[in-house]
Image 1 (cartoon, rainbow, N blue to C red):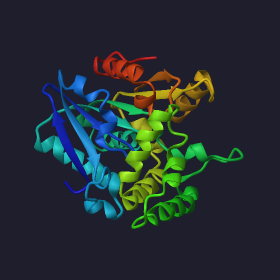
Image 2 (cartoon, helix red, strand yellow):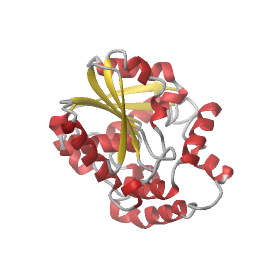
Image 3 (cartoon, rainbow, N blue to C red):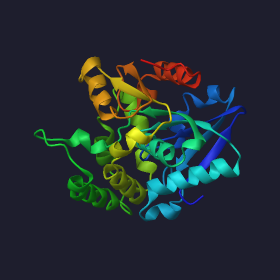
Image 4 (cartoon, helix red, strand yellow):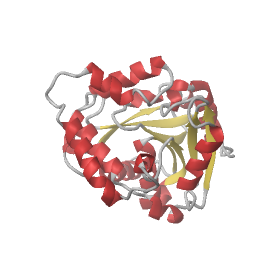
Amino acid sequence: MEHISIVKQGRGSPVILIPGLASPREVWDGIAPELAKHHSVYLVQVNGFAGDDPGSNLKAGILDGIVSDLAAFIDRERIGRASVIGHSMGGLAGLMVARAHPNKIERLMIVDSLPFFPVLLARGGQEPTAASIEPVARMMRDQVAARHGRPVSVESVASDVAGLALKAESRVRMAAWAASADPRVTAQALYEDLTTDLRPSLASIETPFTVVVPWSSTGFGKERTLEFYSRQYASAPNKTYVDVAEAGHFVMLDQPDSFRSAVDSFLAGSASR
């Protein structure tokens, strides 16, 4: 495929796992082997991450390409309606599949992802729009892309992942993953993630989805964090929330047991809040 590769494990009802920005399929190592005992697990990897050839991901259209590749793959392999779990940018891609191809998804789990990521960059009460954030997104894209062909800066990579996990060992793994990704692909995917606003589409997405919300007592706490996520998904008709305590963005690394439990409940159709 032009934009992704997929590795299958196990047999049974289909589960598609989509990692986030600069992440390899190994991000799912904590759940994939167990899931494969009862499910056909399809592990997605974006071309250009984990040392893969970037293919068509050196040009614009990565997110749309992920969606079209997944839809074509589901048809070609006669998968039917799948459960989809996406982390971060992978969650955004999952929402895009649900919007464009609702007949291909039975249920969706969004792991710490927002319908419009730049709301986290709001300053002075002014909520950003895709248009207002575009110059910032372009600058960030160009800065990351400029790393191509240069020796990997340990300091830069460490800075990139510093706030994305609570545990030091989690950040070590994330830094290795980020360093192995093609910065040109990371840059373009970041730009598209920042400039994609799915909030206007939420009301039309009928696919049931669960949002995994990590929080920490040293951060904003449970109630404030859940309230923020509830506002972002307010217009979606069929959503639930599952919170995971003392976890950063990479929930599956910081709290693997709690995350596995949330996934099991989701696949059993009982995830709720």
